[in-house]
Image (cartoon, rainbow, N blue to C red):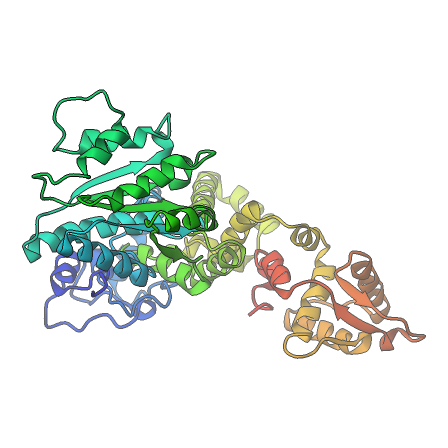
Length: 491
């Protein structure tokens, strides 16, 4: 089954970008430019499947059209940032389900087989939160209905329910019964009994019925009778159910599948694994690639993807973190606008005290979500004692720790203090700051040793003391990336 790609058809690309057929397609988002004869910024929305490697960090302003596009971003920043936040909202459905093609095809082929053979069946979809389960099932529903129409089969009736909405777990049978069109007058029997009677004998009903039961684990009772009875409906001789249960609990299958197997109604299990760093990055890039302007520095997106993948692989969390970073940029722009209303003298005096010339240029010329925005947003979500400790250190102690990380990068596990001092002075000189003397450096290392960040060995001579890094390099990088001084050092 071919995957559904963003702007994968020429018709869609043409309608979005208005690019003439004779023009060459954009080869990479990092090098995209507006043609000189075009002024429509929507041209930047036409991308190819290859355009998922990185988000452009800025557009070279080679002509007046590019300048106009950049000015429009500044003048209407508030509205455009609102659009960006909407694009990154968890409730915004993407145009395609990226990185879940295999799982989507597996479920879709199962449903197709049930419709073709007019045979009931069941699936259990499990995985951690934020791994695309519910979103994929909604996509499968639409693809199945389109396929049935094109292939000449009767379109299945579809019932989507969220099990958290039921007051009583048995209410799901009432919901199914109400939806079933073949139900006649009400009987005294329970809804479950009516469904069992209905599918135990042949009826005139021809359409299959697809039931998508999200948050299935809410139906678990002490004896799990509701869950068992629900799946057993697919085993009745004239049943026309295609039941797909979705839940976060991965161990739920182990708890209820043995009993279902003994009842001959064991569902097929499809597991959605946590997103990897590359998958999170690709999904973020695909969502943002439809915008006609660049909002994030590539390094900022990569930092978000790496940290979220290491923590949980929850795509929803990654989207919330990115939205938070956008809100920080929005607050920064508002503050900058407010400052611009002050007098030139006050503005110049304030800038001399609070920021360097290069900082001012970067802030006002590149209104994008930077790596320091993302680091702050991540730190609010994932606070660890080690990161807090590193961020609370004085700058010179942070430089010592950074030089230790760079010195131990690779196969080295430890070194002597004299060698580490050479790495430290090298970083200081490259950053054009005066390094501390060896005695002061040795004292800073003792402080870091007391904090548990490095380990100092014993020796009569300080320069010969063995030094070992005791914290993860990723924690050091995460803690220091939000500090502009270390951005070049950490490259």
